[in-house]
Length: 124
Picture 1: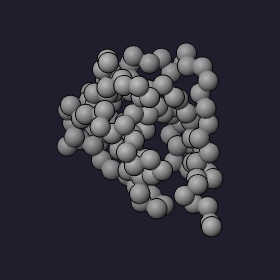
Picture 2: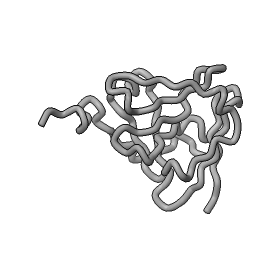
Picture 3: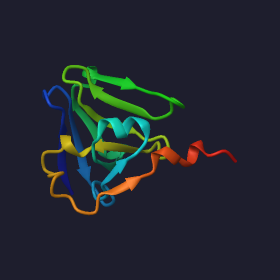
Picture 4: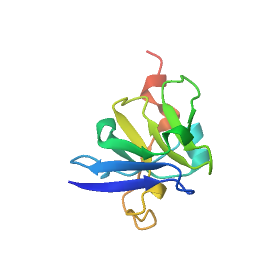
């Protein structure tokens, strides 16, 4: 099992990700109101496989709509680093652009998450 680093632009926030089975192998864009504006590609890892090595005090939390998902960004450079998912609260969505070992411009098969029609927003 190898480790990957997720680092914001200024280097103040540094996360370590265990590349376990099922982690960092799916890549998505999301069309929800927030992700559409951020325009990033995300990948995923279990929360237990992600450790904040540096800069926890620099992370700022942003929540909207149901205020269940937790979106984190660096308070120094403003870069979104990761989020705790609303539909899978045991999983972090990770900003691929902050993982230097992954070239987001060479990724194939980047899927689409239909966040505009999130299953938790559907009326029963």
